[in-house]
Image (cartoon, rainbow, N blue to C red):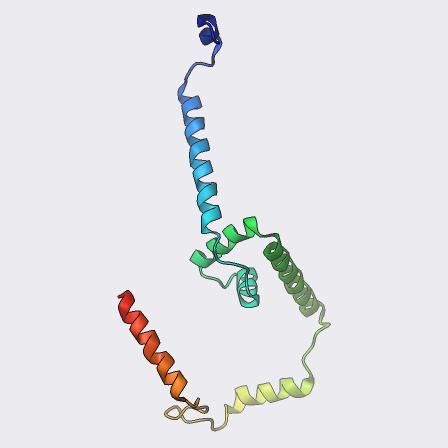
Amino acid sequence: MRSLDDKNHERPLTLTSIFTEAQAKVRDKAKARAQRADTIGHLGPEAVVAFVDGEMPAKYAHRVRIHLVHCAECRAEIQHQRNAAEWVRECSVESHVKAPDSLMARLAGIAHDGAGPGPDAEEPAHQPRQDFLDKVEMVVRAIKHNQRS
C-alpha cells in the first residue's frame, strides 16, 4: 500500500509527459489498424514488379508497404525482384545483354517506313466466342452490381 509520502516521489504531470502518453496511444492504435488493414494476402508477381518499378498507384503502394511490415515472404520477393532489376540495369550499362543486329534493323525499318496494314479498328483481330455460361456469368455480375448500388 502506498503512503502519502510515495505520492510526493511520483513524477509530476507535465505537458510533455501527457503529450508522450498521447503519442504512445496514437502509435498503438495505428499499429493495430495496420495489422487489421493487412488483408491483401500475398503479393502476386505483377504486384511485386509494379511495386519495385514504382508503377503502382500511391494508394496501393501504401497498402503493400503495410503488408510488407508483417510478411517476411513478400519482403523476400520484393528484395529478389530488386536484385533482378539491378542486375538487368547493370547488364544494360555494361552491354552484356544486346539485341541482335537483325532485330534492330527490322525495328529501325518499322520506325522509318511505318507499320504495314494491320487489323481493322472496326473489327478486332480476335473475337472471343461467348457460350451460354459466359452469358449467364455476365447476367449474374450485372445483378450483383445492381444489388450493391
